[in-house]
Image (cartoon, rainbow, N blue to C red):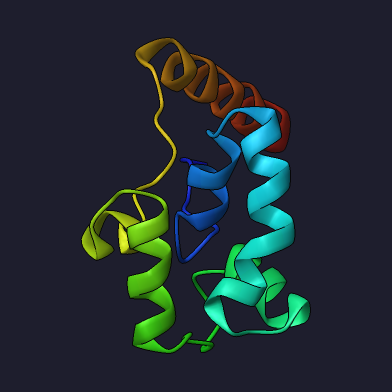
Length: 103
């Protein structure tokens, strides 16, 4: 019903906020800089909150340094933002579902 956090880390979000040319270079060169395989890097980008996977602390420190943020910001897994209008839509949708179910 409410937005939920799906990614454990903000790495992908922060990389995607880079200008396109920088993002392309980062995606190609970061695995080497971090000393991880492309497969491991992909896992870091896409690891879900429910996953037990944890990259090495040194890897997270290097990522935070590259992305010019603190490790706390990198690990911050806030839910997606939601507006009052979105909540109203959710509320009206749930009411409509409840009416349909009660018939």
